[in-house]
Structure formats: C-alpha cells, structure tokens
Image 1 (cartoon, protein in one colour):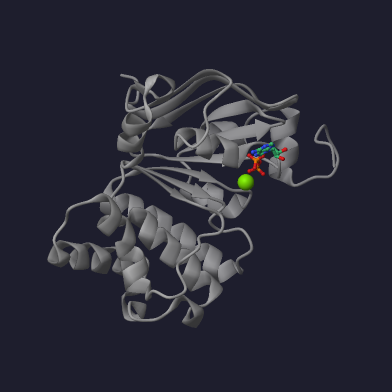
Image 2: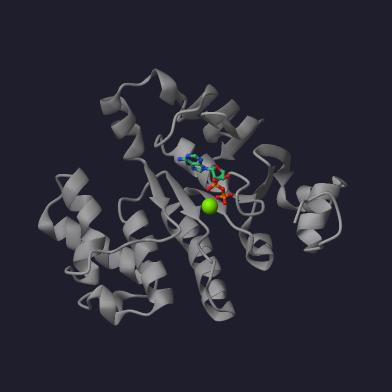
Length: 252
Ligand SMILES: Nc1ncnc2c1ncn2[C@@H]1O[C@H](COP(=O)(O)OP(=O)(O)O)[C@@H](O)[C@H]1O
Ligand SMILES: [Mg+2]
C-alpha cells in the first residue's frame, strides 16, 4: 500500500515577475515521516515551505494539505488549514518583553479557546520536550543562541500541529547544538507523532533524521526518495552536493 500523505506539491511552478523560482516541482509529504529538503542557498527550499504553509501560492500547479487544494480555498479556509501546520522559521523571533513561557503560550492564546490550566500544561510539555523547562520565566535576552532556537521550536510545536516545517534548524550552530537540535526534532516527532519537513544543508544531521530526502537544484526537484536511495543516486548534481565537492555541475 502507498504511504499516506499529509501534503503534496504537484507540478508546481512559481515565478516572481520574470524570475522563475520553482520549476514543475513534485513533492509528497509522507505522514509520520521526516522529509528533508536539501540544496544550495537560493535553490528554493524556503519557498517550498512557504507554499506548504499557504503563505505563497504557486503560479501553476497545486499544493494539497490534507487533501485540500490550497488554491481553491478562501482566506478563512486557508487559515483553518494553517492551524494544523507550524512553520519554524530560520530566524525565530520571540517577543523581547515576554518571558519564554509567555512567548510559547502565545499561539495557544491567539488560536484556541483553551483554559489557562490547559495552556500551562501544554507550555510545560513543549518546553520540556526541548529541554527548557527550567527557563520558562526567563526573558529572551537571557537565553543563548541555541536556547533561542529551541524556544522557537517549543512555540512551533505547542499547538501539536499535524505538520511541522523547520527552516534550516541547525544553520549557524556549533556541532553540539546541531546534535541537540537533531535529536530534539526526532524526539518531538516521536512524542507528538507529527510529520515534519526540514530544510537543511547539514549532511550529518540530515542522515540522522531523514526518512525521505528531496534535492532541489535551481528550482527543480532533481531527486526524491527514501534517504538511502537518494544517497546512492548516480545523478552527478546529487553526488557533488553530498560529497561537498567544488568539482562538478553545480555552479559555484
Ligand atoms: N518574495 C520574493 N520575490 C522575489 N524573489 C524571491 C522571493 N523569495 C525568494 N526569492 C528568490 O527565490 C530563490 C529561492 O529562494 P529560497 O526559497 O529562499 O532559497 P533557499 O531557501 O533554498 O536558500 C532565490 O533566488 C531568492 O532570491
Ligand atoms: Mg532558505
């Protein structure tokens, strides 16, 4: 039987004016799996996440989330769909004037009618999942860079979304924080059973967490499949990227 899908991108192209960003992309998002999107800077990785989150609409083709074609939905319906998706951006910004706990509680206060008690329980569980329960009463200025990243993830998962989108969660971090965050993404998936799409160019971390891997090159998905299969791909672009070589078809 085919894997169940939480979302899928079908024949999607996207242009801004004369600039074509994505070319006829197809990407299934398998339920309960971690799908990693790899590719050099500017390849279109963040754009794919923005399409999945309904923040951008394709110029042609379709984006389905839980079988609903986003291009056929009105604003209210898109907002409904977006409630089951969480985008953890590359630069998660917390509000400086609120404590960590209050920051993490915000999506629940804004989008749900949960009681204060339920909110506190959810916030505690989310902070615990990222190893930050001890810092609930700290202000963002009192947290380190790695802690701020994890705080951003706590806020992204506090609503227990069916799909979490992580945009370069390990970029710019030291190797220990990279390891912590990779494990955290795996643990969050186990604990909350969600599906994740992760953009990254951090290969060791990708190999550790990816069930499926898609490689974007100049706006096209040139390889997709189970992680091991893509690693064995004979496509010279994939091979060059995975080898980190400056010799090959990828322009430098
Ligand atoms: N709103 C926009 N308007 C015009 N060009 C954009 C916009 N957003 C992204 N781009 C361009 O799209 C390409 C892909 O961007 P992006 O998805 O951010 O790549 P990645 O995340 O892989 O680095 C880049 O060339 C970028 O300059
Ligand atoms: Mg990006």
